[in-house]
Figure (tube, helix red, strand yellow):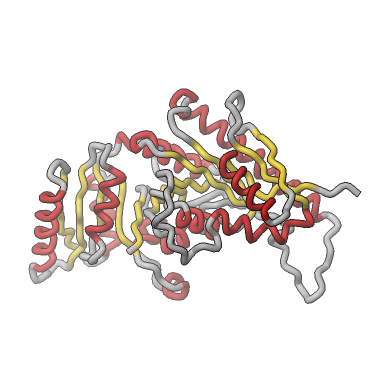
Length: 369
């Protein structure tokens, strides 16, 4: 009986070749198959295929290769190409996030890595008892999951390239990763292992898809070690070069200046004014205003050529006060620092970042303290 080959992941050719060598070092047979994500373009993306009997042995090697099992490793000494990580689920909102990511990448001249995770019926099958019940349709489901993910990915990327413009599209280096797995785990692992400069994703995906945005947005915001730009579903579609005002919401956290350094590293090619704002009580004792003035002096001394302003927003409700300020000042991007919190506190007391995602149509750039 002929042994069946299954696709375990879709990767750029250079990375697929390294993974193939890792598999073969563990005596796992591996085959690479070219695919064309954009019609007429030279193929640089391949399917990595293995024999089905080797799947259990191959999964740990793949996870280690993509960073899933190296969360506590020290990767500071490893060279990594600067890139933006863009998780996609093929929804319209995902496409909107991709276009914003492309706008940033074109100004920063960095690579874009598009990632899609889909559920593999075999890898994610959970037996309901001690005895695994064999599903005779399992291989059909596996083939359908793989085929559907690859076809949807190819269609999505082709349409995205057409809308951006083929000539403009070709000015940016792109990579494509399609794999079975859990979206939040894959996104966090890849961004950590490969030191992504920023993750750009939508806040609400298509529920009909098994996607990488939507329900996992909060997990990425709280756990990512890199900045996360969240594009709400209702955000008007426009290029970042048309933006002019960025709000950094401060609560005088000790990490504010670190976050602002990262913010300026992302925004330096753009002609953008940064407003640092704090929501204070109507009858304050003057300390809030004094802290803001001190922050303004430090920022203007450090970034002499940049436009900074610091404002005290008088109000008792932080969310409502910020929303009014955003509307009045025509803020294009909101930025803030969030802290990692456990699941219970997130359920009963959502953070400001999560509230802003679901109550605003303005993109939110989140830094982790």
